Length: 126
Image (cartoon, rainbow, N blue to C red; front, side):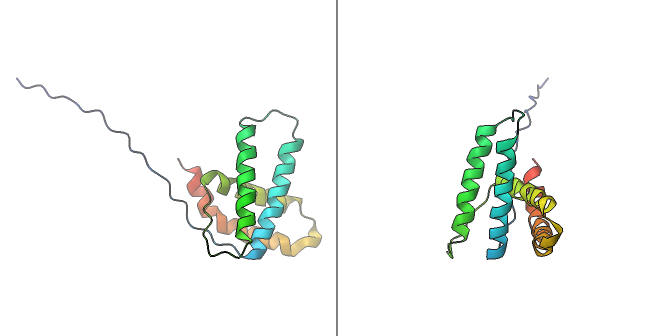
């Protein structure tokens, strides 16, 4: 009688490929504004937030990357999934905070949010 050993299924490690994003200078400036509001909301929040230190580090790295994008360099600036999610969220918060007198920025926020959405969706899927 032969005995068959069942192999444990091996865990597959899937790296998630975030779609490449290309931004105009106006879009990067808008992203920096929205990120500043996002940071302000985190700083003024009275409730304890989980992973606050990690959030601060991610925001710092993201600020540096956005500044690097404004340097007119041919170099590609990669964004990780956390950064993409933060950018997408900060755009929506910024759009909600805009007054009606800033219709162009609202329109740009909406268009930019649509541009980032596929990357944010990919980043949220685990």
